[in-house]
Image 1 (cartoon, rainbow, N blue to C red):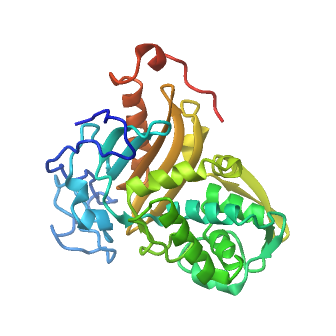
Image 2: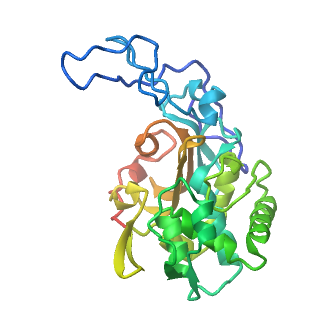
Image 3: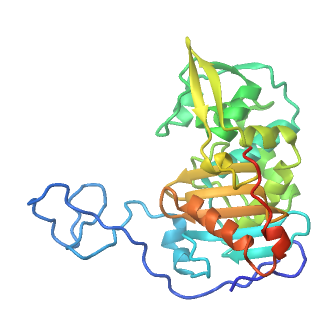
Length: 336
């Protein structure tokens, strides 16, 4: 059930148990008259199973860790599509909503939030010009990037792109240019996690492309609280767009989180993430219903489901009994 847990650092709220209905989604033949594939047989070569008319479930080609471990079958009263969810009052540590908060899963590009914290705390010059080299390209092979080999930007610009646009090459470059190199940087990431009490967290690289970067919702809430202390990280992560010189032309980069454009949200810090092993992920600090909150959503199935889950939580927060009616009735915050 949904519960306002008593005060106390990261105390887990009760979890609702029960098997969850399979995700819906039908695969249809594109042309009329075209024979439908045999039920249960994969004919696409991409791991998708086409089924008889009336069947509505497609088997994912590469299921996430959370899906394989059955976390998506845990039910909750908001019917979230995320396997893991946590909402915490930033000021009191009161847990307002909890679903599998201690499950340890890959966190994809949520990793970049720790990358940004380590770079910021090192006080490295943000105006220093850095160059994308072959090592950055090789380390992020298989992921899309608009930072071509030889691109030169300042450390501050690379930090901006890593947080706002989730640029993998920018994040790798930030780690590579840390004093002592990549090994020292990853060691600093893990040391910072330990200092914050993130005991379920492990980092092996700074981008999140590796499924070995893993954490829990409880740990990530601690990371969001820490990152929020730095105004530069709040500003860069909630930026909507930025134009950067890439080679001889200006390239427009945009946020990966559409909620920062939504006038019903007052977001102070955010980061998205996605790899197949992690599903869709989202962490945010936001002010809702008169409270400063930290939200963590992990292993959400579907391109837009993490956004839908965040909206479900927002709507519940402004109508739930734990929120005074006078506060819930306040107009939405202006667009950032």
